[in-house]
Length: 313
Image (cartoon, rainbow, N blue to C red):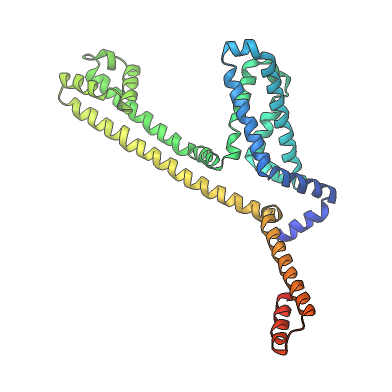
């Protein structure tokens, strides 16, 4: 069924749109195009960082504005070419979240409200730096993995918040009067335990607790075991699982793209096969020319003719 549907779509789409889509797809799929856009993104990031220095802004303000407009023009041409590459199948453009993200980032730069607000404009320019993920597959996989790990991370945060609340209340009950600097209130106790989660200052906290009671060692040992080892390892497991899922999704997307546009991905192999066929024909012609120039003996003729016929086949 999908093959029949694709064939029907190709028949309905005008030939002019197919030619434009084929040309733009070949252009946007080249290596130099990706490297050029990637270089412009790096230049945009460098300009954004340089504008944080007052001396640079005062001396090169005009040139930095021209460079910013040039970067915006390049990004606009890029997104237009990417949209034209999907002229025969416009829905495929919207199925890719990176295309939608790029389009939103570029379009927002032309909105009057955004252009008049310096803070929003700088944040928008900062969002362009994230577009490097399109040209770095490993970074794209990591970002997708982080996004997919958000549900598990939220569960981890809820469990961590519950653990912090319980241990903060216990610490306030037992150490609030003796150590008000760390456990004088619920907020101070939560802040202290949050810092202890990273094992920062755990030695001082344990020594201060031993001066109050020997049972404080059990309190700190159980908290460090649960917060710094169990919960952190659970979070790492969630992220690693999401990373594997993101890699599988990226591999599946590449397979679908290859199946959807086989001409663009196998042009190199087709060109190599054509060259091999041309070389075979040239060898056959050369062999025939040698046979006509020097008539071979009967035995050699019987061997040469089948070989030429076999290569011609």
